[in-house]
Length: 255
Image (cartoon, rainbow, N blue to C red; front, side):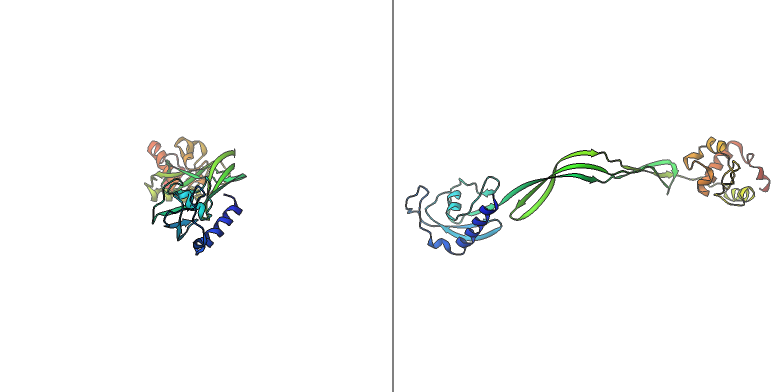
């Protein structure tokens, strides 16, 4: 329904509902003078309800026409326009309008996907893929009912694919067996400095070289031993201990 038409109808509704109906002549729907008794109706138009009186009409559509209350195919009329009138009937007209809007370059925010893994110990997280926002062209439909609007997306075309962030969440348990002994070896090997890198080919508190670190899957914690936490270095050391004991460490004599 157009704005001017609705404005005219609303003004007319206010005039009629405030008492203007008493001045209307009674005419039948075929244009002849009506002898039909007056009917009292409760009419709710665009959310406002008033009690009115009509005469000489037999249907809901006829009553609305007599009251100068316009409606079109978008509006919702209850009972249906061709329904027969009865005294005391409630007639509802919800005034509805719609419009569409197309927007380009709409940002689609990436999501963070968390994946549990035993390869990382419990309490640690590792980002293995950075997130990137996407772009889209969207068509929005705005529906207004009795002056209250709601908007929804009815069509979408992706113009730039979104990349979700992927984070590994550790569920594995660390092996901190022989902790006091590893502390003694670390004090001898590196002065107890668990993140040391002297660029001599040996790394961390227990001075792993890369080949040995990788042989017991230390890279699941960090590429280089000194980049892993103390607890992770000890866990890897215990893996090596299960194969060779303390023999790989020249500082085993401090035990």
